[in-house]
Amino acid sequence: MTWAGRLTPDQARIFPMARTTARPKPERPAASSGEQAPNAVWFKPVMFGFMLLGLIWIIVFYVSQNQLPIPSLGSWNILIGFGIMFIGFLMTTRWR
Image (tube, rainbow, N blue to C red; front, side, top):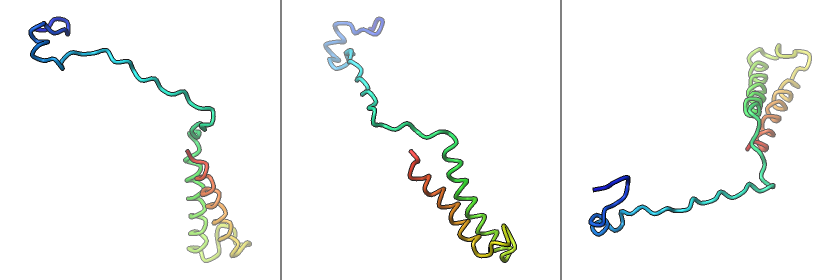
């Protein structure tokens, strides 16, 4: 019979491994000063936003047959689209 979580002497003989022992909790190692903090909440949406905006820029340029987004730039719109996507891809190197 147990009382308040303790074993009786008879139970201790029958179940020697059933005793609970107080184990010290492992200590967490202190954060080293070299670790970088996680990114801000806005970082991931902005990163993916740049990548999607660049992709949409290029798709709109092709679908509109050089009439959109900025018609006076002509084929430079492709470079602008890739540049916007490249900014998003550069941000992935800083993502933690």
